[in-house]
Image (cartoon, rainbow, N blue to C red; front, side, top):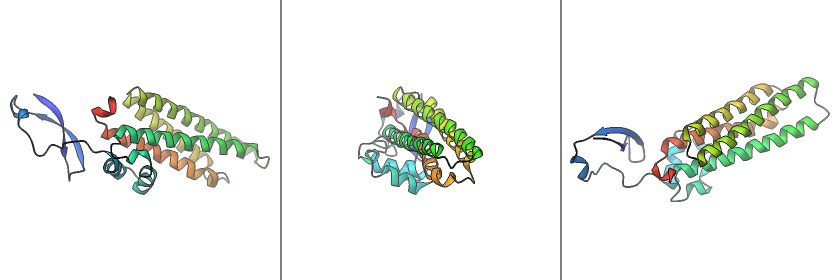
Length: 196
């Protein structure tokens, strides 16, 4: 008989999933190396953040939120990151529209902003799809949507690099990308509780 089991990789908070094959009776005896409960709350936030490219940003974003509540699951962390990404992408949309309304933009600058606006529209669509996928437990699709949103945001960043608009949009775009990453990483810590 084979089943999936969470085992410690390098310490009590580091969990990896392994397939374990056992004899029919061996699974009845208690095992001291099995965790009683999956990680939750602040411990889970720290573990998720340890697997991102920017621990400080991740922790500073999630720890003051409901995602660090004692019973918070990986699904709640993903949901929090996704909601924050949607807010930041919408903030970027408003800023791009404001920059487009200014008459001081050259025609080249205007074209670059319009391209960035198209990328931002795609980001917002992908984040909305990711939200729908999370709510319907379509996790692989959610991860794909989050990666697509991050890539569209990177495209905007590349488009406006070395323009006067870059300084205004950089922080919002970078935060969207990092929040998408947090959402993707958190799915690696989903348990059955995230699907009930």
